[in-house]
Image (cartoon, rainbow, N blue to C red; front, side):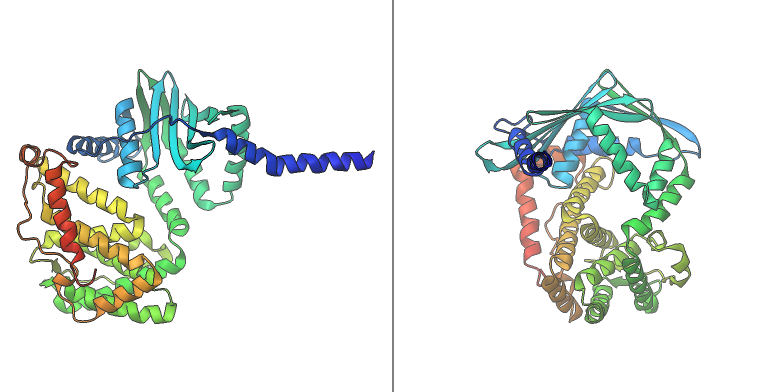
Length: 432
């Protein structure tokens, strides 16, 4: 009898470990996609996304003030699609969100490599809004339906495990900022309470979770070195080449000690990007080390004789090494669309600085060899043309009506011609 029980247990274990996952995989893959298109990259869509994000920001709110944020189903899908496709450049993932009475249905399709079973993984998650919380009712993966009564205990178990981490505890404790979530008539409404003190506490906790102490120390070293480099130029206008060259020379020296040129480059670019926007590194350094932060003098860094190009270049490089080149390019384009609508106008010269900055950031952390090679090229005799393309004959100051008349949209052939010219000029820079 005992032998039979052992055999049954072995067979059951085999089924659970090997057969069940294979069966689940086979049943999950389908030949037909649930969703197969993204929102088009267009001027109007970019403008719309920008306005939705601005509306959601808790700016100008007092402590403990409550605010309602409402977003329609089409706008929610637009933001989600742009975030995945244009922001993170995930081309194979398609999503669609449907809003009904207190229900949020998230439908997604992921295009996988061709298999005999099919090419698509379709997932549908049905959420139910209940006061300030959202619970899963069902999950459908291909032909497999998993009820919420099975999934929610798993989520609860993971929640308990994560409570061992201080940052998650802070997030959980302060999740009461969301007071209510309601869904009606294809509209999602979130009522939340603004508490700057809570946000500050989360930011401080996030330093330890998101920025390792070793990298915080590295940021501190580079920021203090930057303060020493700019000291002789107080109140003057100088080319960023005069700052980038000694900073990369310093990074090459530090890389010999750390044997990690990628992280040295990352810290360098993050620090100089913050300095270009007149921000200090206090938000990224734990409190006990903030007394060691030097206060650098202010200088006006210029690129091609212009201060605005410097900011475009260095901020794009900073975002590229921190969040990825796709996000950096997207933010740069969004900024130009914003400028054309009542600002200084759409500028292809600014866009060239964005792209060149992104390219610098990409190379800085692409691989150990590329990181070291970039340090070598930027450490020697350095001219602006080595890392920034020419901007002559690139149109600037184009307002919304003029842009639409001349270039039609962001996916038009006319726009692509100028865009390709920028890419061509960037590739010809010696450093790249």
